[in-house]
Length: 198
Length: 198
Ligand SMILES: [Zn+2]
Ligand SMILES: [Zn+2]
Image (cartoon, rainbow over all chains, first blue to last red; front, side, top):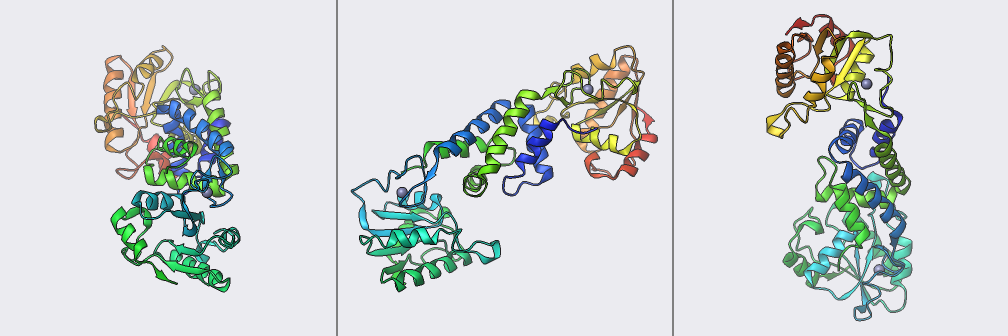
């Protein structure tokens, strides 16, 4: 006696989600099939749509439905400043703080030897190419002030300075260990204004 | 500046999962799009397949790909004993314990006023019909020994005794507060053998 195959497949498939083990995958499957069939259907469609329509922006590497994202395509932004963040949510927070009119590069990760994340996972090759387009004059490092974010900022800073670029780090105006997503826009703006040369 | 719509839709759709708030939905979306595209595709297909192929067994109410599940269709099982459990996982545990050759009814829920779960969510109407088929002689209550499981067992016991059925409860051989899924098969078998009339 076993579960029907389609139920077992769903439970197995849910385990691909971060932090979801066998028990919670089972609970999720029952919940979806029992009380959220419409939600399950929506989730399947949203996965399909996201997989088929999202690419990484050619220039800034963030998720985008077009080869060049809206922000990179905006010629009114200051093309000489490039702000490096870990994730798209960090970019959104900086935009909300309305303190920066340059362009971004989204690492889509960080350097974290403990998690097995190296320069490749943090897309450093793509960043080096982007930063050396001849137009960018200053690269502002806005990775998190966590241990991994600091290591990432340090490594990127060294690589870019070797290549003759001006590099700055947003000011440590944020609480130690803090993540960009969680601070208020005012603190974040302050930290950006007070950036110091790296 | 906002996320691309297909990304926002995916984040919103993931919030349908139990215990998943805005932050973890976002983390899950990034993880799927970044590192688990094949897993995301599999998840979408598994959801579609489960939604289209799973129904509730006409007799026992568990998930099944056929109108009558394999177990209910098995004429070698003892048709006069009906064991009531909360969830399909509980049924699987009892089968693994190899201590029972009767049939099951799976509530697919429990009575829990605090969670807003009443007799309807626990499919009691369907159970009453099933138990009064004229063949069932004894109903064995094997809901969990949690507060909700006990309330559920008590309510079902009263309803069935009013209708002249013999009702028993599996023995409290399990730790108080314990859930069927988590005990070892031996303890579970012991509890079933020592069931007492309710
Ligand atoms: Zn872009
Ligand atoms: Zn059945």
